[in-house]
Image (cartoon, rainbow over all chains, first blue to last red; front, top):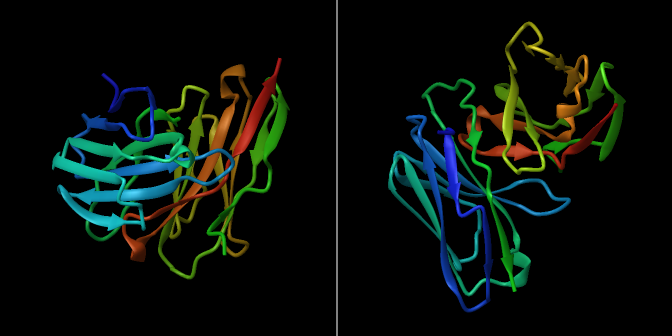
Length: 116
Length: 115
C-alpha cells in the first residue's frame, strides 16, 4: 500500500457534471493538501487542512469544494467545471510539528482531469 | 517575484555521468526549508532530499546531493552516476517557516538520461 492514494487516476467530465476526487493517506499525518498542476506552470496550492480544519484556501473558485472528514481522508468535490480546469490534481500529506522542522510533503500519483 | 526559479526547462545527461539541476530561491524569512522532488511520467511527486536553512552541511541522500549556497540563494541538485530511471521532471520547492504550510514550487526541469 503506497503512502498516499488517489482515486480515480483519470477522470473525464462534462461541464455540467458533478464528480469527486478522493485522497487517502496511510502515513498517520496531520495535514493534507490539494494542488493543481497545469502544463508549464508551477504547482498551485489549492487547499490545506490541519487536523481536519481548513487552514488555507488560495482564492480557489467555489466550483471546487474540499471536504476532510478525518485526518486520513480528503475529498475534492467538483461541479460546473470549465475546460481550463483540466489538469493533474495532486494530493499530499505531511506531519506538521510546532516549531518548524522539515514537514516534508508526500504526494499521491494524482488524478488527471479532463473537462470537455 | 518568483519564489523559486528553475532556469533549465530541459537537460540531457549521459548514463553514469553526473548532472546538476539549478534552483534559486527568494525569501526574506531567515528560517526556511528547501526540497527537491522527482516526477516520473506516472505523475507521482517523489520526495528526494531536504535542506534546512540553518543546516551547516549540504544534504546528501544516496546519489542525490544538494549544493546549498546560502549567500547566493541557490540550492542545486546534483545527481551522480545517472541511471535511465532518473529520466523525469525535477521540481525544487521551498517552505518558509513563517508562512506555515505554504510550499512554493518551481516550474521544473525535464531530465533525460541517454544510454
